[in-house]
Amino acid sequence: MKDEMREAPQLLIVDDEAASRDLLVRALGSSDYTCHPSQSALEAQKIIHQQVPSLVLMDFKMPDIDGLEMLKRIRGDSDPAIAQVPVIMMTGHGENEVLSLEAGADDFVTKPISISVLKARIETQLRMSFMRSQLQKQTEEAEFRRRDLERDLDAARLTQQSLIPQTPPSIRGWEVATCYRPVMQIGGDIYGWLLLKDGRYLFWVADAAGHGTAAALVTTLAKLLFHHASVENGTPRAIMQAVNNDFRDIFGGRSFMTAMAVALDVDSGQASVCGAGHPPLLVTRFGHGTEAIPSSAPPLGLAEQNVQETTVNLARGDAFALYTDGLFQGERLAQARATPAQLAGTVNPFATDAQSLLSQLLNQTRQKTDAAEADDDVAVIVVRRET
Image (cartoon, rainbow, N blue to C red; front, side, top):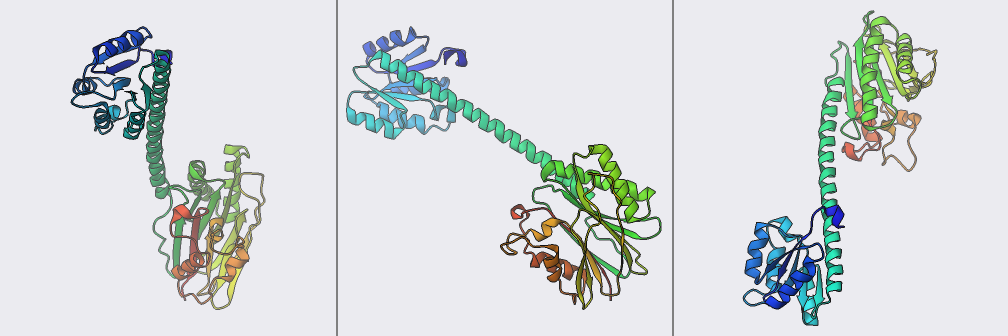
């Protein structure tokens, strides 16, 4: 104990009887304690405010201000170091022991005092005080790390938000509605759109494995890879395969993500669709229902792929929805987890705009508005051809 504290504990001995006080100073001073005697509570109060002792040994019965009143003042002090200093009361009557403990004493010794018992109790209180101080230090360090982590997460959130389009593209004859809800400040879902060399719009969505910072870093990489691949490739199939190859080169098969991409010819309404391990694309035919187009390849980053494209023709009023699997993991949907087929059945084919379709998807799956209570990240893009 003494080695851990590195210096002799400072004991303040408060007793109005000189003989008793001197005896305690001699007995405890020979045990590697530094003793500071005080003949009254008022004097002790001044000493404590000048330098907080390691422990206070105080007589219960003293003139003017007794030990009980002094103890209450110590415990009520505005300085936490003073208010929490260990106090052992010296009492001569059993009822005083109870009063001392009720007032906040850490322990008591009964007169006539056994020095060996007193030393044992002093050591116990010093050890407990040391442990409390260590715990307080660890708590403060943990709080500092928590605040530091919060700052890092806020910075990461702002960075990720800058990567996720905040405003849907304005395309003549088409409506676009989006939703992004991370479980934490940052998430593992991301979406975007690009204008390809042949004039088509590429809408894409990706979902990195896991949650939190690691998944968010992968989404940052995903955006870079999709943008880079779109510069050199003109079809969803070629873009998806290029992203897969780059992802495998970087992670060596140790990480993966799912993705779905749709290349839309805004003039004809023809769309080329390809997915890699991702939930099916939902295509809503105005007035006729919704169909699901599944992925044709495994997730990106695991193996070489031969991604296949599916062609879809969108008439006026038709729409498609790209989304991540968090959309059908809402807790309130039912006892069992929803499937994409069930999700398709919830869409009203007579919806009059993209935002209405998006709202239906979110409401039917009962995703909570508080993202902190959701089960998984949610990202959705709904693209609808105007009537």
